[in-house]
Structure formats: structure tokens, C-alpha cells
Image (cartoon, rainbow, N blue to C red; front, top):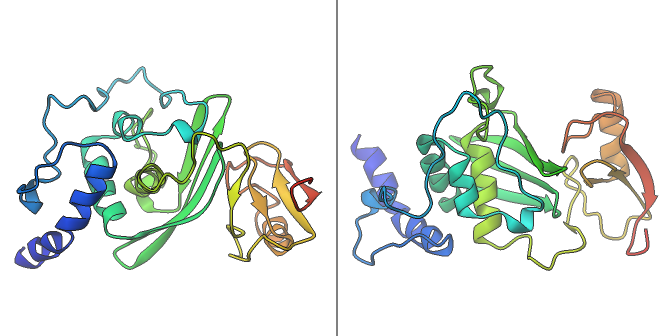
Length: 229
């Protein structure tokens, strides 16, 4: 137990910094183990559990994503755990557009692939962790702390600016190959994810061409790379 407390105390400064960037009120003398005790009267409230709510709150663009939205669409444990992951530099942002996010989150020495996409105002997300795969996952909530942690990183680091009109994509989410300089790339017409030719070959051979961003089939097409493509 003391080891866990020491580990938490060690990232207390990082958690404090993250909460401030996310807009939470944090006292300078607040103890590290109290940082996640967000008051009940906070303007950012958790959504009540309701069996009738089977979808996340509608959002048009990830440039509109906020800590308030993430908290409303999480249970309290998932949100607090996501804060710890995002503060502990365990989130690797891979690529993002106004309608698609891709990243990796390392949790207890295991790295999980995380994606999220917006289609017609509805947010779809996935993670390869056991929690996200459970059939008992609450409807209307983000599936796990890894998805929430990637989203918190996007908000805190302002990955998708409000003025974003084009993709902020640096590498292929499958091969990690830089996309800059390629003559041809493959793009999902549903979520806008860009993939390198080698990444597309892998998807085509291993997963029948299903998009790793939104899970759609038959939506990835080749296109010339570059601003005019």
C-alpha cells in the first residue's frame, strides 16, 4: 500500500498541472492524494446512470471536446483513473482530425491501441483492453479509462484547435510510418483516417480491410497525398 501511495505522490505535481489545464479548481497547497476528490458542487458533473441512455452525448467535432464532456460520459472510477494515466505521460497521441482520434495508452506495462471517431454527431470508440471488450460495459459511457485518457490528453494539449479544418496527422496508426512525403495514402471515407500503403496492405490481409479507426468495412480508398489530394 505504501508503495502505491509513494507512486501517486510522485505524480502529484503532474496531476495538479493536468487538472489546471483541464479547467478544474486546484489549490496550490492541496495534497496529492486529494487532487482527484473533485467537489460534488463542481460545474462539471458526472452523468447519472440511466438504462435508457444508450449513446454518448452528441458532439460535432473533437475540437469541441472538453473535460466536462468526458466527465459526463464516464463513471467516476474511469474518469479518475484516466486522469492518472494522462498525467503520468502514459498517453501517446498518434493522429487526429476533427472527427477521428488515434493513440496508444500504456497501463501497467501493457500498451493499448485506442481509437475514437465521430459520425453524424455520434461518438464511437474502441480499445483492445479487457474492460472495453466486456459485454457488461455501461451503455452511454466511454468503454474504458484508456479511451478517456486519450481524450483528456487531446483537451489538455489542445491537439485539435477550434479552427482546425484539415487533419493533424503525423504517422500511420498501424505502421507508425510518417505520412509526410508519401505519394499515395489510403483514407477512410467514413472517419477520415489516413493510412500508409503498408498499413493498408496489413488491414487488407489481416482484417479484411476493416478501418482501425471506426471499424467500417469497404470505406478505405486510395488517394494522392498532399494538400490537393
